[in-house]
Length: 149
Image 1 (tube, rainbow, N blue to C red):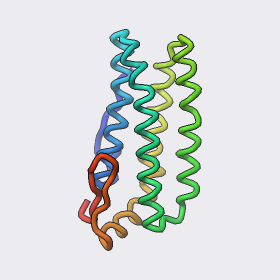
Image 2: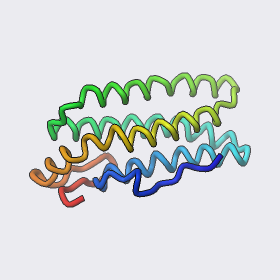
Image 3: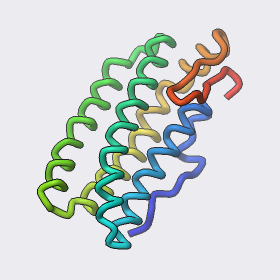
Image 4: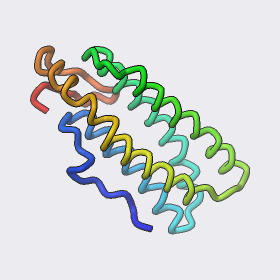
């Protein structure tokens, strides 16, 4: 099994969203690499960071979709909720001593790749049009999205 690779197929062309997606890929890979090294302390630290960052990213993305008037926001938000609802079970199983990292890695890498390549592609034109008309927006942590992304 290999780490998840960032490439053009995962890019939306919206700089702030791509930066957040890259961070999610990094976290997934960090967890996988820690498991390969049998560093379960790092695995234990990455899981809650991944949960927190995912929620923060989803909130930002959903707010941007709402501002852009994206018609499939409710469906997209539901997909995010379904994903987030799976994570506490993994966290609880890990805390109970179960090695869930391979299963979690497979789920995360497949979900993230599918979601970015299929679901997120749907909002790109709406958000780019919104940003072109309204200028930059700031994400948590200070990164920005602009119409020129």
